[in-house]
Image (cartoon, rainbow, N blue to C red; front, side, top):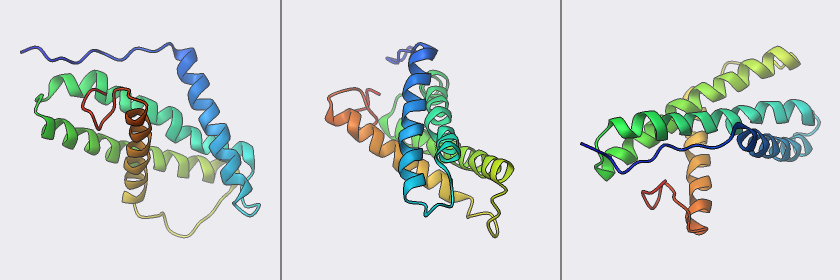
Length: 144
């Protein structure tokens, strides 16, 4: 059975440019409102986990998992949200390890494991909403 999915391809340079700019901007905003607890370079590096790492989570779903599962819409939705959730957990753990290694940041116990997954799902839903509003393929229209 053939599926209508085309693999996503993008030059690495374009990916790096976009994800680094996103991380720099979000890192600057976060550093500004962190009350001096975290500097802009470290905040940007931490958010690079979600911007650059998140790109690869999405690519894994689009190019590897999606063509291998049922084309039924509900299966695609469930698989994509599950991919975002698990990917978000992994990326958040990477952020936490990086923060601890580079800044000596010591928080109490690790935050709840599911918070990174939930945050990444919400982030992806917002990103795909922006794509939908621009008339581009997205999670919401089933073309992205």
